[in-house]
Structure formats: C-alpha cells, structure tokens
Image 1 (cartoon, rainbow, N blue to C red):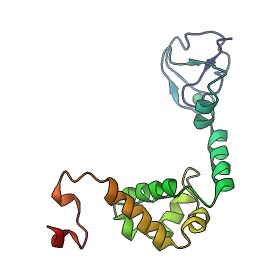
Image 2: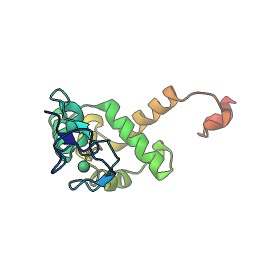
Image 3: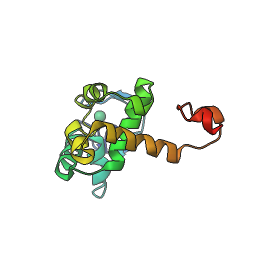
Amino acid sequence: MMVPHCPHCLLPVAGATSLPFPPAAMRCSRCRLIIGAGRARAEASDDGDARARGSAAGVLANAARRAQSEPGGAEEIGAALRACAIELDCPVERLRMLDYQQRSVTDPAMPGLSAILATFTTWKSARTAAGDRTAATAAPATPHAVEGDDAARVA
Ligand SMILES: [Zn+2]
C-alpha cells in the first residue's frame, strides 16, 4: 500500500490513494501545513521513529519517556538550558530558573524543572554543568567569544 502521507505530521492525507501526490501544492487538513506538489510520502511500516517524532502523539510519548527516566538525561538537560539561554540572549550561567520554567511548561520537548532538580538537586548546579559543557565544546576560534570574568585574566 502506497498511501500518501503528509510530510509534516506524517498522517495519511484524506482522500489520497496513490503516489505521487498531490498533483499541486495543497494544505494538509490535519496540521494545516502546505504539502508541495508530489511531496507526500509513502507510508513505511519501519518508519515508526520518524512518525513518532513528527506527530503530536510522538511529542507526548517522548515527554512521557522522559518523565519515566528521571532523574537523568544530564546531557539533554544541559542542552535544553543552553538552548534556552541562547533564546533569551543571556549567558547560561545567568539563566534564571523562572525564565526556563516559563518556557518549559509550554514546550513538551524541554525537560521539566522537576526532572532537572531531580538530576542536579539545585538549579545552580544544573546551570553550572550546562555552562561547563559550553566551555568544553566551544571552539576557541575567536578570543572574544569568551567574555566571562576570567577571560581577561587568561588573556
Ligand atoms: Zn499534515
């Protein structure tokens, strides 16, 4: 069966029965995103991961998996903190717990505050761990990239 599926939400496209589909760009009736001409994809039974990632149900499932595995995922938590800090345009060492919390409650992909505290005990140590990782992985290409308090002394 080659039933056309939306490339965005990965759900079957209503009324479509064969590929390639659609003949012209159309709006998906489920996720409301545009499916370009011929961009619908075939259902693949071994494509469960992609389907889970793409669908809203998959997002919830991922959140549930995270909840089950807490405490843990230190690396994931660090990445979430750094991403949030970048979004707020502030150094991760100064990222405020409340700012993170406000974002994490509306984004199921972000580890919850409870999981972070279960892993790191305190917000400060979570922040420090995320900051350490930044320093360890940052490429020293530009000397001005580091603007911490110690940067001047090192230079
Ligand atoms: Zn869709």
